[in-house]
Picture 1 (tube, rainbow, N blue to C red):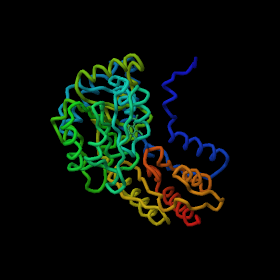
Picture 2: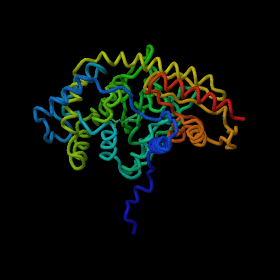
Picture 3: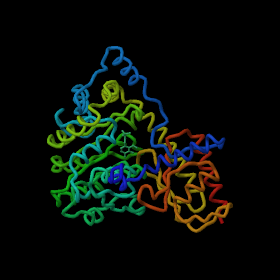
Amino acid sequence: MSFLSATLDRVKASPTITISTKAAELKVAGRDIIGLSAGEPDFDTPDNIKSAAVRAIAEGKTKYTAPDGMPELKQAICEKFLRDNALTYAPAQVSVGTGGKQILYNALVATLNPGDEVVIPAPYWVSYPDMVLLAGGTPIIAKASAQTGFKLTADELEAAITPKTKWFIFNSPSNPTGAGYNWAEMRALTDVLLRHPHVWVMTDDMYEHLTYDDFKFCTPAQVEPTLYSRVLTCNGVSKAYAMTGWRIGYAAGPQPLIGAMRKVQSQSTSNPCSISQWAALEALNGAQDFLSANNEIFTRRRNLVVEMLNKAKGISCSKPEGAFYVYPSIFGLMGKTTPNGVIITDDEVFATCLLEDTGVAVVFGAAFGLSPNFRVSYATSDDKLQEACKRIQVFCDNLT
Ligand SMILES: Cc1ncc(COP(=O)(O)O)c(C=O)c1O
């Protein structure tokens, strides 16, 4: 009898962590490495948020809280949903967890039974399929294409839904592509969902505030209010507020689901860190002006990376609406050979050679379910991005 759970055989370790580990090893060995694989902003947490946490410690707000969040934070989350998304939720419909990841995981554990299917558009955030597997469900991958800017069409969603579908996981702006669905594109998907009343929607709005140019964010329950009773609207402070290490995510949805998620959380982590909850309260209620300042920086970096990558021979890169990722295609490089004699047969070989030969760490597309591509995170300085893109251009030039 195996000591380890059989469930683990179905799950793989995070490929983004595999790349970061390899990059770290090369760095220790003295190589000049530029990491474009991390999924977190390089900005520091704003001072007002840090001060709120220091105050919470000084005031002894260091005890257990309610399992799924303290009332003050739940109230602030309700106000945020009304202010930003025109969605009305009561505090009893809100759940706060240890990061957006735990919120999604709680919801899946609380609802999935063996045989239940979860539709996940590809390219997807690496954790979705494995979280579904860990929770005992079956991920059904619906592939979007580069031709639609990596956005799922109504027909593609329709084709993926079966009588066994329990959830549709939706993420806009997307990790890994940065693609954001506008109102009409989302409307096309919500129209499909209206025809399938047994399908619930888990919308991961983590990158809501990171959008560029004239793009206007929207979320499924806002676009189609009829879906309100079967949508879990998930969000968090990690990305927009540069708070990845604080570990606070949240969701709002129908009360029975929120109650089931509370049960899961109360028997696992008890509650999210009390000090981080006070910091998150300040993030949501405090000044928001740094968001537009950060977005100006991200817009500039996105434009720089897209322009430089499109100048690399064999790479084509579209300009996405949000997040801090681009997802270039390496279709034009397939079958070429590196100066060390390695043939580029897929995007994993490409990413490995790129790291070993040039010191630039990116994540290969297969990890996100759509190849041949790679993900670049542009949440790093302009200088590093410029140098990394130059190295990618030279790498491509040297392929024969
Ligand atoms: C799409 C998406 N959802 C959720 C998360 C998890 O966020 P958190 O760090 O709050 O757990 C991430 C983090 O990379 C993400 O990219």
